Length: 221
Image: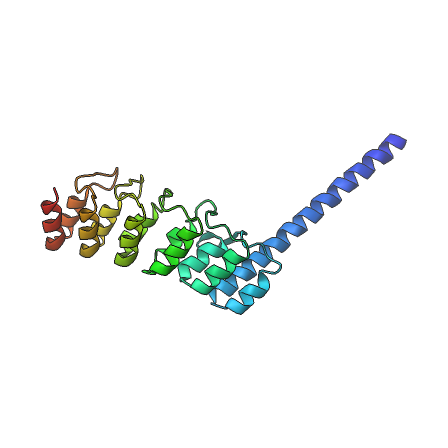
């Protein structure tokens, strides 16, 4: 009988502990979602207030996938919020599965100062992620000439090839960014480099009949 009571006590204790853990997890998830909402709505004062009780390295599942505060701030391009997050302890190298890095998010905008700040704080310039590529590949795809130039000057690999994403030159060509194409070629991008499932730059230039880019690719072959 005594053994049964002891066993019952242990079971009740474990169930209580699991309940507390589950409740704590829900609370953390709710606070992270509230922080992400404040970032999305560009409310820096509210962000600062929430950071007093919320882990800046949290993550939350949104409609378009998982997101972390620093990645969302980078996507929006809000330098002030990015700075507040890092001051509160946000890790510039932290990202979750199915999401890009903060630097990759930041280069969606042609904002050199933001990219420079993240790199200075330790962001990995040549980080590769399947489904996203690299920071240079993303900036090239978006046609962000100033950021592309800055990334190259600071050691970005111009011929980095990520399966499923191609290369920076392929992305710039596919999206018709002739100035980015020329900059990449001048800095050693290989016009003949093929990517599985993405062919090569000339294939895309011919497909879109972009005579300017076709001419550039022929010049550097």
